Image (cartoon, rainbow, N blue to C red; front, side, top):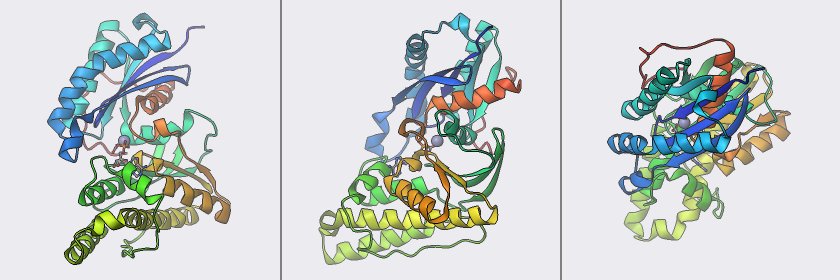
Length: 335
Ligand code: KG4
Ligand code: ZN
């Protein structure tokens, strides 16, 4: 029996990544991170596109080589169609299209947000349907009701900033380099989460808002720095712990509400912020308190990676969901 071997490419933001999936098993996940953005305090789209252009051939080469797969073995090529930065998406899309055309094999488009959720099917334990996934990344904060691999409904979302953005912007105010989320996580581990109080903003239904809290943090820091120039330096761990605890409580409130509303106890988190140790702890506690079965992806599959794109591509391949050469990236692609 011929094996189904798919090459998947991710280039939506600042990671160039490729992965090979054989008969539904993700074989590897090669990621080239772009350090060029650190000095600018955020991803510079033009530089991201250039770096993807430089990385994509070596990353794909290494992925195929590592997996022991030759181009002739490939059954299909998959790529991230959106959401993401247009110039960055174009590099992956153009590469995948050329590859598929040259090898005369099918082309599969993947929704990046759907892929973040399908990362849960790479390794055991896997959630059972229906489950609720809190997808938290630099660009998104969504509560998704997942009925099947490719049947998902957004039941709650942020009305302004994403929580990852709130982490990164807070880090910037604290003078930390981009991306600041992991650094806040690190300093928070040594701090007192009750040291400072920040307002929990509330939105109707299952929606979120993270712009108000961002402004509150800005004023809090400004006022305290006026009184004590070294306020941030002297209180970094406590500030990080307090801010992180506030973000997490905001996330957990709506997650609890969604679980109740949809009577679901299978709960997953996905996206870059699901790497956060405080959020993971809060989820474990909720698991004990409410009898939830909780699912957290392996670290390498939390932040952007092609392994999750490969997993999504596998399910689309099984359903024969292919696209033609006229496909183009969708920077604002909805789930
Ligand atoms: O999913 P992702 O890699 O890219 C997007 O699609 O946006 O998410 C990146 C986001 C960044 O905002 C980053 O600061 C955040 O995930 N992040 C974290 C942690 N690790 C990554 N935020 C808090 N704690 C972490 N440990
Ligand atoms: Zn992402």
